[in-house]
Length: 377
View 1 (cartoon, helix red, strand yellow):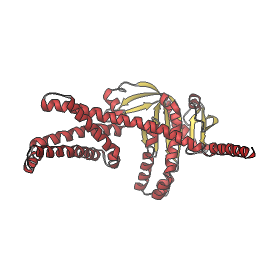
View 2: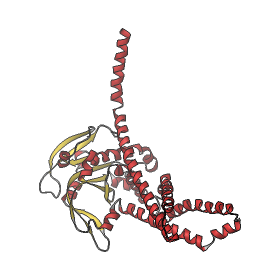
View 3: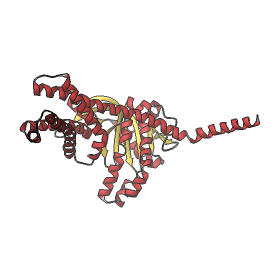
View 4: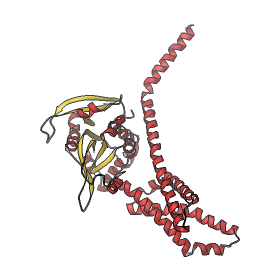
């Protein structure tokens, strides 16, 4: 009986120790599961884009080539779409990330062309041999204007597809479609959340590095935000020097506290890569941010250079809130209006700072400082 009690006591102690020690790990696992789900959804969308686009190409190609469309043409396009999707998954995009826009489009299109051309040529070779044709006829076919013309058409198709996808990425996800549909051709009033995220001690860092090293450091920092930005449904509105402005439609930013969790996840991403930053640059990025919500007018602006812009007091207020981070010794300040509207995650502590006089504001703005249990929560 005594041994049984001892075992039960040890069992309870192990449970208590487990839940204390692994709380951080369980939070991380939970966050990872959410990220996997969102990443999977993102990949499904990319898969659908490739498959639908190339199935349509197969349909149209057969119509133009033989005068009718059949299931076979669509099926071949479907297989091509799947093949190129997996090529994209094998980091074709990552290998061209540092190239210019035009070089990226040309190189990716050539890679796609090569992926499709190899089985195409092999099919022609073995198909010809099966019919009794020799290598001379095979090379005549390869060098014929008909075959080269088809290769040229396929390359133009890839060029068009890659150009549209990469242009959408260059402008920002979804912006190309908004321009094309004229969504913001007329001004619209929207409810949005904004985050102004700024690199700390940027002037000091810039003085200790060469111009090119500092730019590389800044670029690495912005690139390492990519996954959290995508996972938390944020849009990059602007890069302003060493600052990035993120925005969400209010309902997306509030959902699952996306506009707060993104800060923690960027923090975790940088913390995870701290050793790499120290080895390459001698510094690891530290940053601060301000978050606020409110109404803005969204519209296309400009003639010579068009841009979709947000206009409203919420942007000025968010920038002013972020500027108070150093004064209050906090890395993340938010408006009380946001605190009232959002359900904060359990690992977030909120400290009200009361009404604060912000530069350019006639009335005090109530703000709060947020802190976290750990980087990986």
